[in-house]
Structure formats: C-alpha cells, structure tokens
Image (cartoon, rainbow, N blue to C red; front, side, top):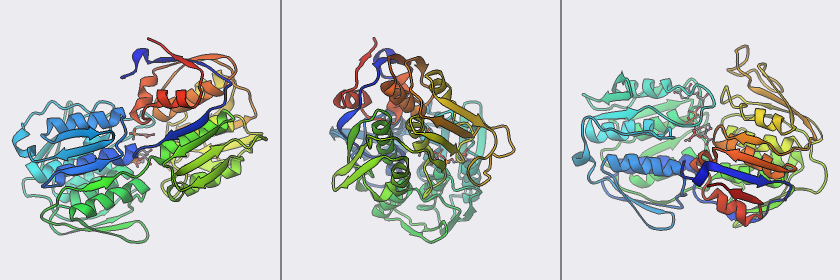
Amino acid sequence: MGLAGDKITIHGGRPLNGRIELKGAKNLVTKAMVAAILGETPSVLRDVPDISDVRVVRGLLDVHGVKVTSDEDGVLTLDPSNVESAHMADIDAHAGSSRIPILFCGPLLHRLGEAFIPDLGGCRIGDRPIDYHLEVLRQFGAVVEKQPSGIRMSAPNGLKGTKVHLPYPSVGATEQVLLTAVRAEGITELRGAAIEPEIMDLINILQKMGAIIAVDTDRVIRIEGVERLEGYSHTALFDRNEAASWAAAALATEGDIFVGGARQAEMLTFLNVYRKVGGKFDIHDDGIRFYHPGTELNPVIIETDVHPGFMTDWQQPLVVALTKAKGVSIVHETVYEQRFGFVDALVEMGATIQVHKECLGGQACRFGQRNFNHSAVISGPTKLHGADIVVPDLRGGFSHLIAALSAEGTSTVSNVGIISRGYEKFITKLEQLGADFVLEG
Ligand SMILES: CC(=O)N[C@H]1[C@@H](OP(=O)(O)OP(=O)(O)OC[C@H]2O[C@@H](n3ccc(=O)[nH]c3=O)[C@H](O)[C@@H]2O)O[C@H](CO)[C@@H](O)[C@@H]1O
Ligand SMILES: C=C(OP(=O)(O)O)C(=O)O
C-alpha cells in the first residue's frame, strides 16, 4: 500500500522526542473533496494531508470529471465543471481502502440524476453496514438498486427535503443527509445527528458554498435546500485523531512530543482522560506539547462514544500507554463491535489484556448480550518485548508501531502501508522524533 516492503524493523526502548506538524483531518478533508461536486465553480481546500484516503477520493473525483490540481503543498483546487460530460452509465470506479464513495450519492444524484457506488473499503472493525445511508437516500426520493459490485441509484423525480431520525448518531449518515439536503427541494429536518467537529467543519464549508443549515440543540439539524451552490475556499480542521495518537505515543515511549496544529477545543475530552492517566500537556497557540510525567501512570475507566464523548479512534493508541499504567484499566468500546483485534499482538508482546463480551465499566451499549468482545481489561504496568506483528487496521496499526517503539528489543511490523490511510508521512515523522528503525525493501 504505497510503502516499500510494507515492513519496518523497530529497535524499541527509545523515547520519541521532538516536534511534528499536523495537517487537515482525514475525516473532514475527504468529505470536503466530495462537497466540491455540488458547486458550480471551483473550490480550494488547504491543509490537505498526503494520505492514501485522499488519493482514493481524488481518483474517484477524476473518474467523475472533477479536475483536481495541487499547485502547492497541501492545497487542492477542485474544478467540477466537467461532471456532466464525464458521466458514463457504467463507470468502473473502485472504493479502494476508503468508505467515502457512499457520500458521492447525493451530489451525483443532484448533478446527473443517477450514481453508481462501488463496494466500500475502510477499516474492518465491525460489520459497518450502510443501511442508514440507503434509508436516508430513499427518503429523499432516490431509487436504490443493489448490484453485484456496488449500488446503482437514480432520482427520477429529483430529491426532496424530508424528516429523518437516525437510530444512532452515525457520522457518515449525518454527512449523507447534509450533502443531499443542501440541494434538495424544500426543508430537511435531521434528528439524532452526529455533531463531531469534522461534521461542524463540513457545515462551515457548505455554508460558504451558499447552503442554509441550522444546528439546533439535542442533535437536531435543519437544512433549507437551495437551487445553486458555489465553490468554496477553506482551510481544513486539524486532525484531532492523529494528534491523540502522537499524544499516546509520547506516553507509551516516555517521550515528549509537540504536536503542531493541535487545538484544545476539539480535544477537551481526550485531554481530560490524558490528565487522569497522568500525562502532561501544555497548550500553546500553535499546538499542544504532550509528555510523560516521569512518574507512574494511572489506570482509567473509559467508554468510547459519539462526540462529545471519548472518540473511538483514540482508544487503540491509548491502550498501549495503559499497559504501562499501575493498576487495572477498562475500555468499553460502544461505537464498533470488533475493535479489539489489535490487542492480540500486544498480549504477544507481554501485555496483560483480557477482552470480554459484557459491557464493562459503563452503561449497557448496543453490543451487550451479544457475541462481541467489546470491553477490554488492561492490567499493568507491564514491560513489552519485541515481536513480529502484522498491522490489522489503521489505528490498530499505529498502536502496534508505538508498542514496538516502547518495547525492549527488536520488532518487525508488517503491513504498515495501511497506516498511510490516515497518518501523513509517518515514517518521516518517526525519524524526526528519533525513532530507531529500518524500513524494509
Ligand atoms: C471516514 C470517517 O469519517 N470515518 C469515521 C466515521 O466512520 P463512519 O462514518 O463509517 O462511522 P459511523 O458514525 O457511521 O458509525 C458508527 C456506528 O453506526 C453504525 N452504522 C453506521 C451507518 C449505517 O448505515 N448503519 C450503522 O449501523 C456503524 O456500524 C457503527 O457501529 O465515524 C467513526 C465514528 O466516529 C470514526 O471511527 C471513523 O474514523
Ligand atoms: C475507522 C477509521 O476510519 P474509516 O472510517 O475511514 O475506516 C479511523 O479513522 O480510525
């Protein structure tokens, strides 16, 4: 997946120290790129990271006639003026490793009256159905037809505003509603919306384009459809998930990392937990310094949740740091049913972690009384030792890297290409932070 050899040999035990810079959030940038289809004029997006999910979306936009150019580092211009002429009934598009193609539905239906969406990628951390997306699109008036390698859609009578109530505040389904409702005829009322900072930044972008969107209390969003949207000019929100990952790396390796571009407001919940674990941080105008206290770390009880709760994507890297805390920590994963596959490698490296089917340490969640190992009990402190490990998914992969960096001895970590889905230039960043490793191949 874009990295020579896809394997790293890591000599662990050296603290990560230094400064790295963040760019825009994977979970915003990729959606902002799709939003450009809705404009009549070109859009400009700044702080775009060089990650493989961006490359996948760029490839799909290209297939659909959106000309994407990058003149400067991290600045994309997206010109959608050829979407109509590029349209072919049977576009052979591929989702690659990304889940973003499902969000092309509304914009393409508005512009072309039909859309073909290939089967989705993304991390395999649960079943990840798209039933909410399809139901929402049907409510807007789309006709959805499943095909062997994807989904074909049409909107013979156009798309009309509707009342939607999501059964769970899904990030993707909320974005689906936004990207469809802004150009649908009439008013859409969305209840049970996700309100992650990346969604708020997508709303900022859509408003710049000419949309009318009101965010009310209690997860209610109201959108008044408009007939025309223009291109936007926007600097993407920073990647708070990457920031949390490097913060966890600083703790796990007993290091000190200044994460340039990280901001407090979007990380409040993470910072509270970091402080309870014993991690230190200093907030600056241009970033946040995260560092190990030099004393024992404390165990914590965490439940992952939708925003403003503790983000599920923060859990995997933090678990590595929790193997070093004195006492018993509990992590109850309530967003994805199968997000603890990565702990097998940590156990092989010497960690003491048990996973359970019960909802531990918090409220009963959607996965209780079912066959999902979705609670983890981590006992520490344990010393990790080197091992040969294979990266299972994006965040699991990052946690394997920091486990190997914090371990005594040598590890080989394979399949590291997956990590470039969401971490820009992570090899360069590891070098900047003084990691001791060799890239194979
Ligand atoms: C590209 C992107 O932005 N990815 C993020 C996005 O994923 P994504 O948008 O895929 O995640 P969702 O918020 O939609 O998923 C949350 C839960 O809802 C369920 N669900 C979702 C849709 C649906 O149609 N049916 C259904 O049952 C999922 O299986 C999951 O259990 O939000 C997640 C939760 O913050 C993050 O972990 C991902 O990093
Ligand atoms: C689950 C993640 O991403 P995606 O939805 O793109 O698979 C993630 O970023 O951790």
